Image (cartoon, rainbow, N blue to C red; front, side, top):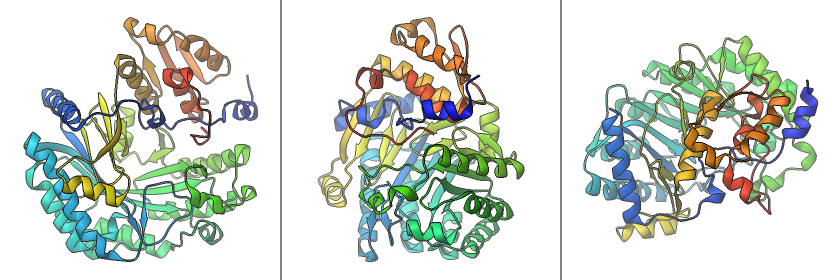
Length: 452
């Protein structure tokens, strides 16, 4: 049996995170506005037939300060004058969809960023009043929002609760002051506790904390300190992400000295220590770098093999299409992807012209659709099975998977592949074995973070 150290040395390589397939660097033909609306309309029809609804993601890019680990599309400013025009443009963008598609059923809504709680209570109220005017929200629809505990107020949470939000995701990352100084993200346990307790008092039923391992200056001691504090606050879900060090894409990450960033075996030790502590606190490991209490809906969805993954992360239900509003936001109709303009001026200008602000995307071909399903299964269930007609797209896959089977990462039985417990940290590598586009055209420059 290959040792853990040998597996890490062999498989800790740059690779996609498989939020989508094909992955963004391999997108080719972007849909026109008319093509995109047609694909979205078709997805709505399919969902209606299955008794399901769609999802809505809204991107709010504004932040008051820049976190030095961040790779998201953000606008760093303390000048709040652009927030209200942004809200009005979001509503205008949404109207471009509803004018064409009519009332839309949404089973899931997620507001991300940036910092969504950069918006004032009045701006949040205006946004959700306008968005939900032409929307059918079932009683069990999941409405969630990302929040910065340093700037989130009771008044904002009251507005969210009024509009039906029950899920709150707080960016924590690490409580150690030395690590916080290194990444320019300062927040106290008291700030996090206040927002958490206020949200629960107002009826929020699912609180998620985002933690990151592999940050500059992070040690086993800082991981233990952070998890100890998190255990006391008992969030329902925890996303324990590996820090994606991609300084060629995020220039702010060039502020770190290489020796300050744990990598390879040192980074993996941080994850294993955090994982051990979380499992000891009665959290269940689900999906990829995620944990939840048994009482949380995401754990139940994972246990029942109905968990879904999209550009909003792991969710407890399958929704389609995914509408996406705001700068850089990515929509998904299952058969096509469409990403918005990334800069504020370009995004505003397109909407002012009455155009959907699509700047790039991809129309999936038959091979893409087959492989997308298999990779999604692996990321959400750690197993998948392909039908005979799929074999024409999998010519090189058996050999790659056979090597992984010899290394104890997967179990193979006919056309079924199951990721072992030992192989779960390497699930991205297993997905790479099925990635036909990556196999045909390996990147000639840095594109991806390391897989482990």
